[in-house]
Figure (cartoon, one colour):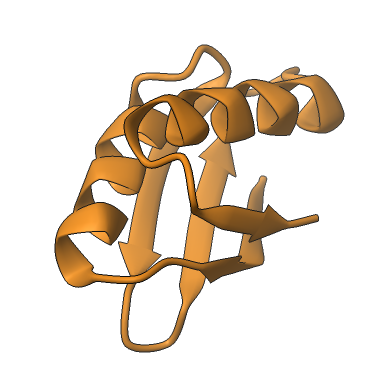
Length: 72
């Protein structure tokens, strides 16, 4: 399953860091961040709990870029 989330991030480099952090999160099959559109697309692994995975994605993204936001 794929979902798109609105994000708030200051620069393209920060968006790249968020994308890499999201891709490394357990339960995420693939992730992409579009800085210009301020969108993050997440593809979840089969059977993954979307809510708990997104909490982990937010935690991992905040670890690399503390002033980013992901709107669920």
